[in-house]
Length: 291
Image 1 (cartoon, rainbow, N blue to C red):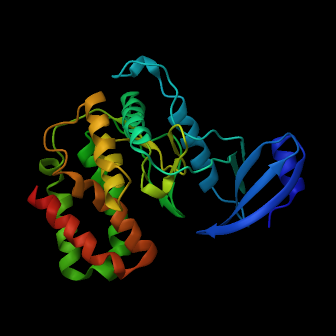
Image 2 (image 1 turned 90 degrees about the vertical axis):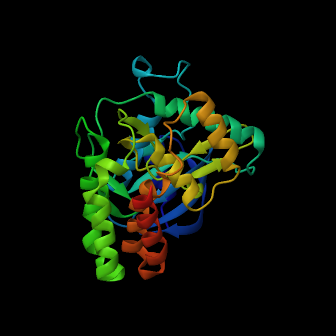
């Protein structure tokens, strides 16, 4: 339980009441009502962690993309939740009411995700330490190409920890993907400003737009976010992708490369949850190699 006094200090306003409503990984989740009428969402950790620093930095970075480097014109009004306060034990953002997905909001989300991706950073990676769930994530920066960066910083680091569940055959299959990554990655693209962990649970469908939360943000490949949406099933995915493609067309063959981009989050899930993800991981590796 996080104290109202601690939240008041961070927010600079009195907290009326705090409700506990669950936990995620190593942190607790809370809803707090403030004296000024606002309602906020709070993540709290029992011990200092760098996870909240990475998350808050990533949210701000996604919200404030550089229009000077945009490939899709338009104002910067990214559908990314705003950070109200953060430290090494707490993250506070506005409470978002989930109204459920609709076709209209899905179309808007596709266009707005494309606009986020279009505001390109200069390098792959990011200038802060990355995390995904409670696992460290290398954000080492390079000018590219993406294929080598992905193999070195997204696939190879998780293979040893997933190895006990993959078995010899599975290890060799993932190693084959790494060895052939240049041929599998498709046309070379510059870095995109991506969410990095864009499964359906990290989208809040408000009445007006789909808002992004809980990123593993970095300069990456824009196909990665679309692949993550497909991995565990996002509502109205066909509409999201169609609106995205109309706004910021994807390179030919992007759907066939989806399993390659899904391989990293599947390895992460194996590290976190074990052998239950083995079959899905091997299927993604095989499909990536098949192109």
